[in-house]
Length: 330
Image (tube, rainbow, N blue to C red; front, side, top):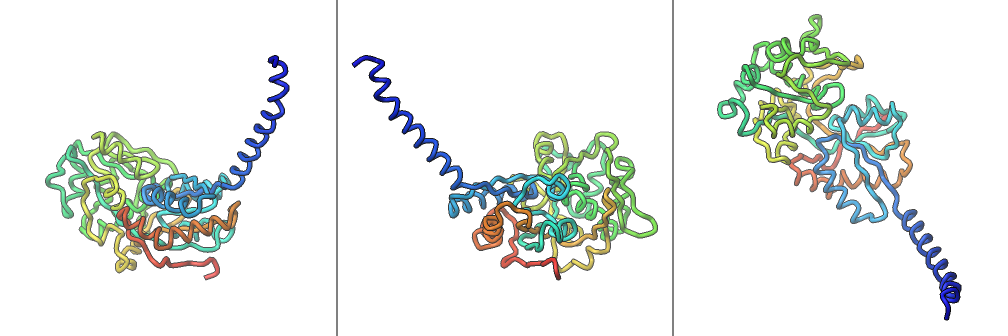
């Protein structure tokens, strides 16, 4: 049999096989859909676990997570109109304030946290820092510290709230001590006590304070020794095996019992929105603009269900189970 005869014999079979492969590939691609989830950086570790568990239960759904500061996550939806199916933020109130009623009609409160001050064995004065002197340590010459951008990340504006609450708790001008020289554009509005105004854009003076878009980005600076201290969430500190100082509940925003006390301070962000301090509670919602509403609901239910609560607990975050629901019409 000549080569030409072999080609003529096998060519139709090859074409059939090729067509079969294309059809199978297309069917598989159609069978598995992509679910886009925007979430706070501090949820990266538990959501990685949740993604694995969720995809095991629903193998036709491919979860694509995108981490950022919570304010930025919301803005990507409402300003840039980036496709998103589910959003989970570190401050649940961002969803009612920024996404009701056009993008979401509810939010589920599903986790809690608190602020801590992280450090390493290389951090200056780490052996003597405590709940009574931490702000004095941060003021010392040569000590560098950081927090996230208040205009992009709740951990950032919560850091400012923590400092404002420190004025009340320690009865000394902690806000002035920490910010006056290095972030002079951060100022307390005199006509309304304990309300801090944050400009839309700012730049720290000198090499004392370091600002990053989201709090988890400070971990590299901390571990490399570029900074001595960083304000993080307790869960993040434990997830990354960092040394940390737990702050008094009166200033760390971790106590539900102190809700009224926390509300004595507030921050006005660069967009002129005023946010009153409150306990740190996370929120999640599937979006009304989702391309896959059925699957988006499944993911939200999974996160707020037993397996989601377990993943949060394993990641050192306090789950709220069952989740509390706030609807747009309430």
